[in-house]
Amino acid sequence: MERILQEQVKNSFPIYWDEDFITLNVLREIERKLNVVNIKGFRRRMKIEWTAFKLSGKNENKFGDVALLTNISYQDGDRIEGVAFLEAKKRSKNQTKFEAIKTAQLKRIYKNAPSSMALLFDYEDVTQFADTGAFAETWSWLVWKPCTCSVVVPINTILSVHKKDTTLYKFSIPFSYQLFFRYFQGFDLEFRESSIKTAKGYAADKGVPTYLVVVSVGFGTAEPFRDVNFNRNLFSKME
Image 1 (cartoon, helix red, strand yellow):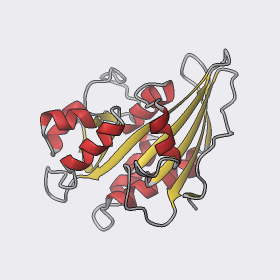
Image 2: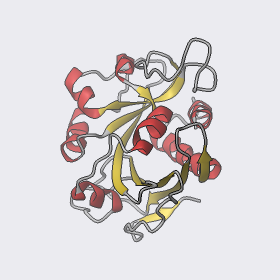
Image 3: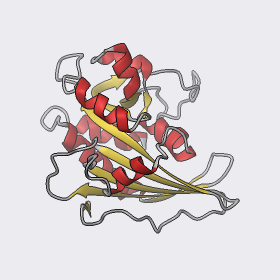
Image 4: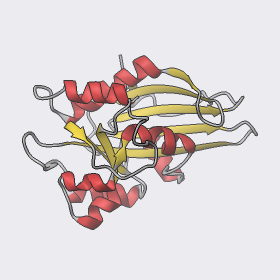
């Protein structure tokens, strides 16, 4: 995952340095290479199925860039469904700022999704992220080096510290880590019915995400849940 993210983000700079372009290519490449994957190394076997959809046409009432609709099935028969909202922002060329960060937009997202995150893309290596404890001095889960180019920061943190530049990195963790060690474990998700309806496109009054990513996770002998219902009139599969 980290290799895909680094390739897609860095290859976009400088000619295609645009949040929508980067996000589209990241999601498309993850689906192409990791559409169905069995993961070993955790205490329990983990099977992940990943499918990405894009909003058809235009919708002025946008609610964030990415809604990660996550279904997790457990070996004892339990299943949870939650959603993570991500608002993508790129570092401005030759600056330390994220000029596209708008306070009013973040407040609107946070009001309806308190666990939402900003997904920050950088054309240079990011090494100042928070210590996750996931790597030691001689080994790293980040392809043998403790750096990345895509991190997540809680939106409520951004609103609290009033920062819009790379000093936000000290509050961040790598997006790849957030996916596997947080979202896919059931953490930092929104579980309210209103949030899930928004992600699925059934609450257009609150907004519609640009991208809907349907992720199904099965732990142990549990198979991923595949019968996920969402508004297919609004979203089309990415080709």
